[in-house]
Image (cartoon, rainbow, N blue to C red; front, side, top):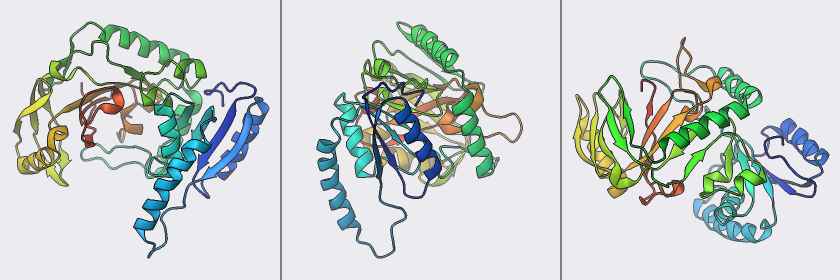
Length: 333
């Protein structure tokens, strides 16, 4: 509620998965009412997993009808929260995203279930679920949001009108420019004033925990190579992978082992599979990779984590479609 900065009379809706975070929902709705906003209640998504034997076609067709109807019903919602367990495959979530794309409303969402975007490092197991959840809870409650926002603003300013070069000791050396491309700063600011200035969907869909800056470079400006740590491609292990880019497209693929798996995934996804998607850089010190028993919290939103992604970048204002996307994480840039 603090991050949304709800104003008296604003209309608020929660979207939730049945049986998850019920106590939080009660507190949330009380705080909304206390702020003077209008509590519209909670829309439950369909509980998952669905029972065995249910017809997927029935669910898909019903969901499509519901999405269109909900877009009309929810057009006057000013602010919403997508609680854990709700995701864009659910009609209520998808309908609100459609409205966000049209410049209506703002929302906060949480990734919490199934590890909540935690990423294992090669040779390292993920921590226990309670450790992951405690890390995210601390980041949500204790982040210095003003300091985070200022760091991210400075980084955006430094990128404008400059050539950006990303390197590491393994041999990665890739450069690009962003020009006037939208820069998404996930600094936890979900106020109407800030989201109203948004240029792309994710400027209105604010994530908690906060921490990352994301941008899709000008596609033809991307040149160089990325050298990967051990990774999975097409479901198989690949070591020593090196991708070379010219004008935003992969022109060469090398690997010490598993090169066929990498080529299979890249070639199997058409032009999107060959395209550089985005740069992501984490800034939140409370989500940094720990020195002992290391892992990458929350999709690399922690200080010092770099994402060099492939695929469709339309959600970032880019020109590469196709649907495919792949996030690649680096902790040694």
